[in-house]
Image 1 (cartoon, helix red, strand yellow):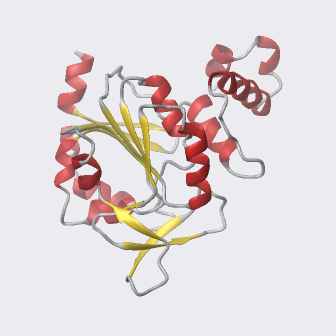
Image 2 (cartoon, rainbow, N blue to C red; image 1 turned 30 degrees about the vertical axis):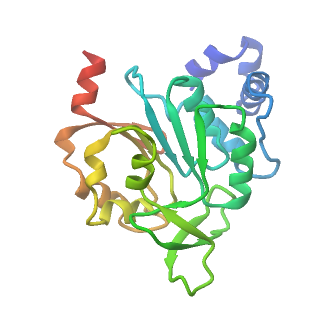
Amino acid sequence: MKTLIKKIVPKQLIDLGLEAVTFYSLKKYKRKYPNLTIRRGETDKNVFRSIFISGEFKLPIDIDPKLIIDAGAYTGLSALYYSSTYPSAKIIAIEPESSNFDTLEKNTMHLPNVSRIKAGLWDKNAFLKITDRGTGKWGFKVEEVSESDDFDIKSVTIDKVLSESGFDRIDILKLDIEGSEKQLFSSDDRAWLDKVNVMVIELHDRIHEGCTESLYAAIDLNEWKEYKEGEKVILISNDYYKAYAG
């Protein structure tokens, strides 16, 4: 962490701690992105730190992605990171919760390569109820309900997003969907997995027991290179890795 801090802040700030590093980094990114919104009293600052200071989305190889699906996009900070790192990529940001989605729109409205979908990522067409777990605005989860119930949002599937994207493959699939990853990886319909080059996943066994088990049951780990970065599991298909790592 200290090595990373030395790279991004003046020496006189290093001893002031993480708050000073965050303050300096926010100033830098607000100059670059004037619309950048970090809501006071929410978990936005924590997400900013994990992405822009701790580097949780940084990949171990340099790639040139064409399509990035950012599921669980929260307020768009991950979309900002991906847009800055891969400016030629098309980025599709998916977020179900209204207050987060509104902030996502503010944070990414000036980025022509980012499109937004207000929906919950699920393994099939479904009606979803949003539940506040009381852990802050980064902790909303969804669960399937019937149409006759008081649902909050409709679902969207990876197959549908990909088919409407204009691309045949997903270069980066980022999943931070508060336990819904168990539904995706436990589903009988997982043909989309063969169309993904990189997965960046936060697993939420604390919300739904079995998320980790469902991921590793769904893939053949011999076909992927696995890395860990903070709370994220990064999986890069062997063929894609060879194409860029040489």
